[in-house]
Image 1 (cartoon, rainbow over the protein chains, first blue to last red):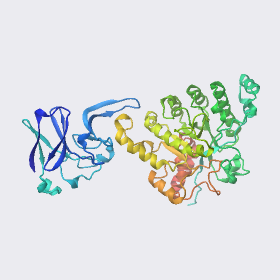
Image 2 (image 1 turned 90 degrees about the vertical axis):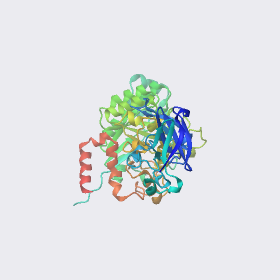
Image 3 (image 1 turned 135 degrees about the vertical axis):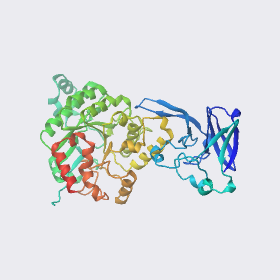
Amino acid sequence: MTRHVVAEVSGFPDKGIRRVEVAGREICLVRLGDEFFALMDVCPHGGAKLSGGRLGAVVESDGPGHYRMCRKDEMLKCPWHGWEYDVRTGQSWSDPKSTRTRAYATEAVAGEELVKGPYVADTIPVEVEGNYVVVDFPDRSAGRTREAAEA
Amino acid sequence: MPTRTPLRIDADFHLPQASIDDLLPYLDEFWRGQVVDRELPSMPFRLTSYPPNSPLTKNPDFEGLDVSAALDKFGTDVAIASMLHGAVALHNPDMRAVLMSAVNDYVAKEWLDREPRLRGSIYVSGEDIAASVAEIERLAGDKRFVQVLLLAMQEIHHGNRQYWPIYEACEKHGLTLAVHAGGLYRLPPSVSGWPSYQFEDYVMQSMVFENILTALVGEGVFHKFPDLNVVLLESGFAWLPTIIWRNDKTWRGVRPEVPWLDRKPSEIMAGRVFLSLQPSDPPGPEELKQIIKHIGGTDMLLYSTDYPHRQFSGSDPLPAGLPEEALPDILSGNALKAYPRLAAEPALREAAAILEETT
């Protein structure tokens, strides 16, 4: 694993979404207040760049005509088909039943072979060090297998 | 163990239409006078989906069979009957309401009293919600009525909140909501305007049902009325795979707009929506098997003859290609789930339980 600086905290607006390139791969970086989140910048459903999407709330309801916004801005909506991903876990809420059974949800993983779940976007651990947003990410030369990612 | 013939419940059975003269005894003095003075008895009041001489109207297999003989012919234990009277299309809301009430009373007295295998439909108009709710309340005490029947083509589709008092009354009394093919003939049968020919009108009916199903789901009827079941009659069913898939697919992308849809539309429909088997619209047994595979089984299908209409050839209303093991449910098990009032009848419940044990 290699640590990569992907952004400066001071220049990153709250609720901002940015596409950044790390070790030849593209990730989608999201800021919510003091927290930063990163997902692979590809929608597991149709392949769109999630960084072109919008942030929204989880909308719950007690019945027809009733709307309740929860977890404001924590869902990233894909620009192509509107599928929503939880920025914290990468889980799709567009088919919650399918995703509940998946094990990858909050695991810090990377690599193409792990982008198997049709309803889970890969997340990447993000840290803030001083004024820098940092991600742990394998170099391309380190290989793309899960074993390599875990090594 | 002796083999038993599965209980047979016919979900779509039509009674011969009463003439206006037949209905006169069921009208009060004022309305009898109105109807006679305006020479309404000379009018046919027919819904024209089935013109008398159209080959679709009469099944040659039913030729010469009256209601009881038709029930005998297919070994029907229970038939859910309707009389689709043209009074529903009247503009005068008061005359419409009294004639529809007369139709319902006529059905109870002339048919339900005489043929114990028949169950009835409370026939109501979607145009006058208050009158329809009052009619349901008036007749709900008669447990032989097991459903409330609305026609498929109305001014506004069935998901709309204006109809919800009708659904509330259905749910309150354990009545199933039936939507039967047909319309008022002053509204285009197609969402894209008027066709020119009967042919088009007839084909378009199944598309209307796709719209109705989507509307019932999308507007939250199944959420609002958790104990309400819906039966689509004479709707066909081969169109289900695409519309169910499209509902699920679209919901994934627009979920926040309709947050009361807390799971996939296909899961919301499961156990709540039923369709009559005739007309069976897949072209053959192989296609029928594919449709059943696409919709995940036969739980939605209700045996029906559509007497006296011509929907099948030969003497068996069951289309070829249905899985053998599903027949008991198609013939009656699914109907007992669709119709709380049938399930509440001790004799039917007992017959179904015996079947369950022996199959």
